[in-house]
Length: 263
Length: 246
Image (cartoon, each protein chain N blue to C red):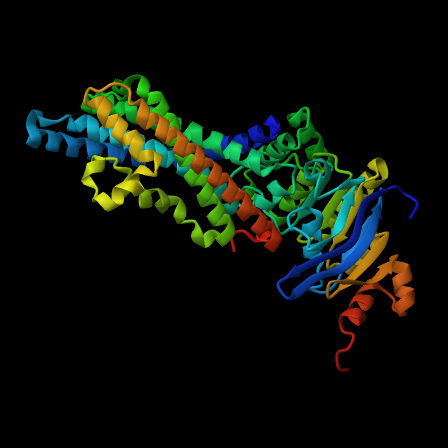
């Protein structure tokens, strides 16, 4: 792994975003819009429910953490799509750049973008609705790590699918996270799911983060059990995603799809 | 061939299912040598180049560059190689200078900005290097691709139609420039073009591919003498149309 090659790819995205303010606008527009909507929904539910539960914290906490995972996945996949759209993949892969360096650089780009959008959202949630994401305390750190790693695992797998099936599959970048959302239990407890679906939910790291978050908001301590299971599952998903990407890349190289990406 | 060998291809095969795109070709390229890959569409030129650039996995055969096995030493080989094609794009939102800077960093050039400035001066790109790539004319884009291909001071350069879309004056300057780099630095080139005059002018040797095999190999003069034709255009037509009814 050569740092200069990772930084070269990161700088390419830096130049791109400096030249294209609309990409930065998009980075903040959707999170802001959704935060406003979810903020008002939670205020209304809180009003109806009275003092029965901390719905503003449940909803806004859930939304901010979910969006962070989604940005991690999308940021990584978008870094690849930018190369597809600009027909630049061939230039990159006839250079000494390795797959690992490309994925690492895409991860760094994704991290920078999600940090910007999450900081802005956390600030807005605090100023507009009085919810501070830091109220999750020390548990926030492992929650963030688990979510970002799972987002990257999804992003790498999505990238592999787009590489294998071409630009026609690029819509996966926007939809793949939402396939998992119903079992991620972002806005409702695991017990809400039918019993047969609960084992499926427990097989994702996400449900452990969101159950843990609700436990912290409800006044419990740091949910170490959820954190440990979520982290262990993350290791499996990240390893599987990287293995899948390498497998896909080998197919792509065997069939000469890299030079024809976009068709 | 007396020059040290920079590229050696032995028994290279590429099959896509039942179709054999490249069928056991072998050849060498020496330091400072310009070898032309010639052949009709579908002859296997692009497939061969893609395998030589590690974009495509060969079904069989061996590629050795600078004494290193490409399959095992991809990074080390590609660090000393580059590629330019009229048909491959660079990110169009970035300026030409930004694109060159990214690739100078990618190839680990010690002072990327200085290296970019050198290449820009060499290729007379100063007037438009700070313009966005999407605003460049096709001729300017061709120069930009060539500049990108020379950033890492390659010892072996793959050129796919390098002067397509250039006006005759600029194309002539480019050819002279490339020959100059060859003379000064011993740059070897594998060259494809459908401009037969250009191939005749540039190439020390021609490999004529047909249906995935090397049909003829030799200097342009040798090939023309062997087939009794006056130029490469006639040679191309006579080989490509062999077997067709009169």
